[in-house]
Length: 414
Image 1 (tube, one colour):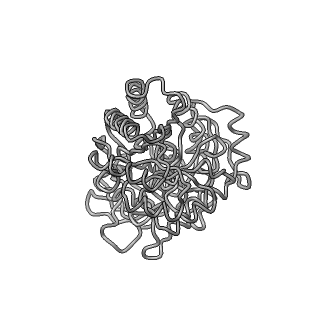
Image 2 (cartoon, rainbow, N blue to C red; image 1 turned 90 degrees about the vertical axis):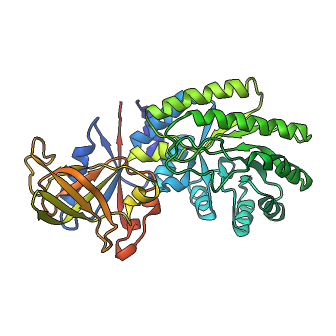
């Protein structure tokens, strides 16, 4: 994957980026860049993120080439970092927002409200009124009660009926238990919308966050087709929006999903003039773009076991282990104790446990992980830490995830 000079120019001028320093990196320059930050931070040794905007640009190129017929609406909840959302806006992404605060954050970037879908099927009335006041005119529903709120607070809003996908795709975080109309509920909901004179313009589904197999998209697209047909039978205006949700992960899983999606669209929505297909990728754009560096603040040796404490953990960025069912890994940077070999190449490793900084024993980041002998003030660096990490962290025990700094870089990962 590569990224063009035009992309770089657009990104450097993007909202959320243009007033910040962006370090231009050579290929494979992330480790050296991370070390350079560490050497500058030795008085404080606080954790920090590196956001590689070149990775974001390359992923947008990948999406556009692989699924050109699907317009991405980035799921802001995954990671609302302004440099990330500003970059995505500059690269042409639209946005999936789930609350007033998320809508406000995206509008503050200069994004037009027409580029936002309020993709929460259950919304507070005050938030619906706010969406109406700022011109966010596309949202989702899956109950008669939600239709009544929309009729009262935003009757001109275009609606997508959210249906439960038949298969959750082996998702890390299934969404079907909470959202989505069941097949037998679809016709009554469409009838209720028709009686209320609300505009149902299409269908939405989400197979679940972090899907592990892609065949679920085919079944969900087939189910969406039956909803289009039900609306036609009820004499409603022809639907023209299909929202295939999220569940995407960068890499081979995305390539497999794209093949299934294109095949299913050809099978169930062939030659559909005027059909707009959208999606809600989150982790696809965010996960691999962020790297987290943490400092070792404590150590204990028990025989052959090494135990380390770091200054971020389960109540902070690594909440993804609990809530996103993430599997994380790390590499050592012994920048304090072994400057001649900071990557610890060739050194003996030990079974190690890594704890977070809080006083809760649940705050355990890694167990039985092989690490070389490290010392207090060395570092552990965690790749792929952009999805559902800082966004869901807390300030438990006074360790404030929101205060972790993010450094911006731009590399060409071709």
